Image (cartoon, rainbow, N blue to C red):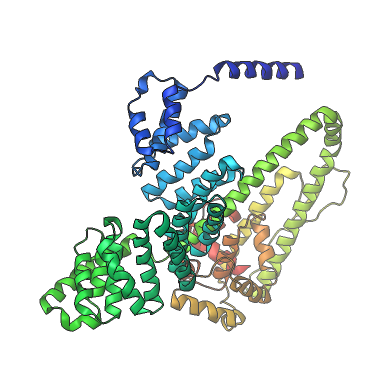
Length: 590
């Protein structure tokens, strides 16, 4: 067997060496040119007949086309080409282009406006790129792009460490151009995060560098510095900076400059100039620019400067724009993006751990196959029967606890004078037997592990019988009069969301366990330990009598999601779909 594997490896190596031909010289020239003159490289690659290339060179062509387009500032409009490239590079990692392909995947989705997907590609690329010298350039690009995406997602605190790291790298490599841009980005992030002193410091540094290496860029940075001065209420300084900026700013940044200028002149009390800039903004095709323009013009300070007829039209147009923007952006957008970012971090760590564990497991398996497979097999056979018997006894013990708990609960809750029957389980302690005796009413039968699901069905049927025949008691006054219950009602009234890590959940669980000490244990037994944190949170709120609509408010989810969670709980308890009212009643009975 080992000889066959060795021969296959040798044969694969020979085939790989035979097929590892050099790429087309024209593509090699484009690859060398793209960093020096992207537009010329883009023109060159379009001149290469695609049909004349080999299959491998076609993938290289596609990769270079995406790269040249990106470096030539051509906006990406489709992901079809980069997805094909990424798929090929993932299967041919020996070519050394996979990390860069992932980076350009991020750039494509960045241009398409899909920031979460762009962030995912950037982070995956960052995981693959080492800090060695030849990879420093692409690594810095990835860090810069990640900070830009996080800035767009309004995750400012998370963005700052990335851009700070890339600024350090720019300084070490004496890359003045990128140092200027990255310092400007740091200033923008701090400005958005309302860290105005840090923003001012960063913009001043960027301006100093720009005046030396790229004077045109200093105009844009002066605009941002003016905005910072405005936010620090230093209006005279803001006016001094914004006046020359408006005369020299490029067309791409002009609307941003007009917006800042409108607010600055408004705060300075120069109404005519502020209205002039706002009027130019409302002519823009971009709804955000028009929104800003109307917001300035319709300010109470300018009430006497606008003709009533014009004001009515402005108000109508402004309301239309506001409704449009509200439809595009949900109230919980920032919260959702933050949750997504935390989820991405968790996913990356999980994938890393899984990959490490898989490699470790492969090494262990190979070692065990060589040194101890026979011993392991014998040991497995020896302990198999004992393991099955122990598992059976453990399961039956759990069922006995559940049965006893349900009987006690029914007695405590006072379900009339009717007798509630639940099966009595007696477990044989004889470990030397493969079966265990269980007495159920007047019938005796033996149970092996396959009969345990039948007992669970019987217990579930008893629960349904209790629910159908007896009226549940009201919510305990201990819960209703507790401080935590009042706090939850306040959250509902104000439409506030309780995050998963909020200590309120622990407080709520504590008060419920005062009333029903075995609530959580019973719920775990019924679901065979399949509960997730979201299931427990939902069950706690149901136990307190919180309605599904209010549960949706508290956890920041749609009502349909809460219905799904209740259905999921019912499925875990009953192993089949049941009504959500049923699981609500069962939870309140526990």
